[in-house]
Figure 1 (spheres, rainbow over the protein chains, first blue to last red):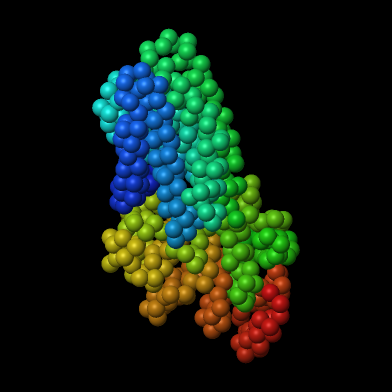
Figure 2 (figure 1 turned 135 degrees about the horizontal axis):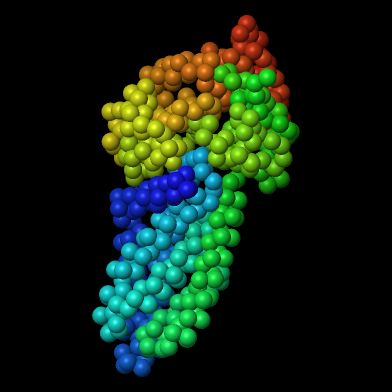
Length: 224
Length: 237
C-alpha cells in the first residue's frame, strides 16, 4: 500500500509545489471563472426566478472551462524538457502516475472552487454553504478531473493540444456536467432527496467507471 | 549461468511507416561498458528509449537483469538509470527539489545524504539550490546525471552524455564511469569515437536497424575500427 500511495502523494505534491512557484494556472483560471460569473450576472435579469433557473449552469460552465485550462497546463508542464519521460522512468506502474496527476488536478480544482463559491454566493445571492452542495462539488469534480487527466495526457502529444482537449473531453464529460447542474439546481431549490439522489447515483457510477478505465488505459497514451 | 544485465531479443520498432529497429538482438553482460556507435537516425536513441520503457516496442522482448520490461516494468525500471538528450528536470523547481522528487519516487534510503554524495561526485552542489530554469545547459546535464545515478542503479543508459559538457564535467563523467567499472553495467550511445573507445569494454555499431558489428574493445585497432565505422555511416540507416 505504501508503494502505491507514497508515489501518488509525491507526484501530487510536486504539482502543487510547481503551481505555488509559478502561479500560472491559478491566476488565469480564477480570472477566467470570475469574468464568466460577472458577465452572466449582467447578461440576465437578476430576479430570483431567473437566477434559480440559470445560476447552476453558470456555476458549472465556469468550473468546467476553468478546469480545462488547468488540465492543459498540468501536462504542458510535464512536457517541458521531457519531464514526462522522467515520470515514466520511475519504478511505479502507470496507474500510479495517473492517480498522482489526478490528485494534483483534483486538489487544484477544489481550491479553485472554494475561492469561487463565495463570489458566486454574493453575485447571485444564493446560499452555497450547504453540505450537500459541497459534497456534490467534490463528487462532480472527481469525475471531471478523472477524464480530464486522461484526455489531457492524450492531447499533450498532439500539435493543437489546447483545441484537442475540449474536443475530446467535453462530449465524454457531459454526463458529469449535466448531473452536476441538475443536482445543484435541485439542492438550491430544496428539492427532496429522491430527486437529488438519482443524479448522485449517476455521478458515483461515472466516477467509478471512468477512474477504473482511465487508470488502465493511461499508460498506453504516454509511451511512444 | 548469470543472466545478461541487458538482453534485447528481436526488437522491432517502427515510427509511422519508417522502420527504425528491425529485429535487433543485443546482450550486455553484467558490469560491462558497452558503447554503441551509429550515424544520425540509426536508432540509438530509440533503442535506449525502448530499453528504458519510454517507447513501446512493436515486437521483441527486453529484459533487465532477467526482468521483462513489459511484464515487470516497475522492477526493471528500478534497476535503470537513464540520461538522455533532455535533462528530464522541472524547470521551476531547484536542482535539490528535483532530486528530492526523483529520490522519493525511487524510495531512496537516506535520501539527503545520497543527494549530497552524487552532487559532490558530479560537482553539482554549488548550484543545487538554484532553479533549473536559471542554469546553463552543462549544469542541467550534470543534474541530469545526478538524477540518473541517485538510486545507484546497476544499469546505466547514457545517450550522448558528452553533449554540452565542458572538459571538467567530461572528466567527472569519465571518473564516475571508471568508478563503476566491473560493477555497474553501462550502455552508452555516442558519436565520439575516441572517448567511446576509451570507455568501452565492448563496442557495437548500429546500422540498418540492427547491431551490424560488435567486438571486444580490448586489443581493438582504433584505426581499423574507425574505417569500419565510416563504412557503416555511408550505408543506409
